[in-house]
Amino acid sequence: MTTQKPPAVHVAVGVIENTNGEIFIAQRLPEQHQGGKWEFPGGKVESGENVQEALVRELKEECGIDVTDMAPLTVIEHQYSDKRVLLDVWWILSYQGEATQLEGQKWCWVDKNQLDAFQFPDANQPIVDCIMQSMNTY
Image (cartoon, rainbow, N blue to C red; front, top):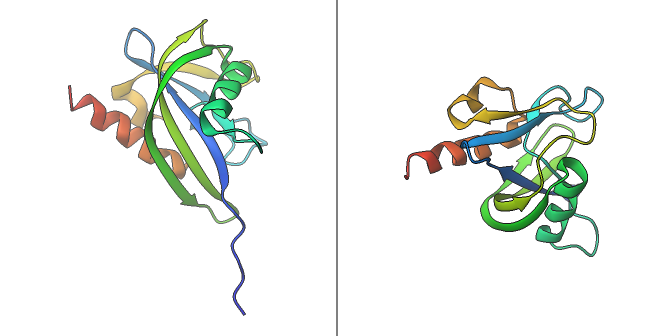
């Protein structure tokens, strides 16, 4: 008898860059899955939403910004010991408002070259790698 894996949690993730070339990250709350590690903002895609709608909603709720333009960066599927996630990652090309953290998490703007100094969940490491590769293409 084969056991069917539960479906992956579909998460919309935004890579927000400011005019100084810094990336917005936040620290997961201790009680959250992978608590204490740093992450790129975003959240679950809800039933009836497409990924872009979810990302716009999540970044408004979590960071207080209104996304006006975005482009796909990467898609990552990762199996943790207790859950499977599908991260749909987008560059936030433009937005209105000032990014902050509205959910009580610590947050900061980090120079792209310093991202590897922060501990991210394993599923987020490919995002860091994509950001680093994008720096080498300019």
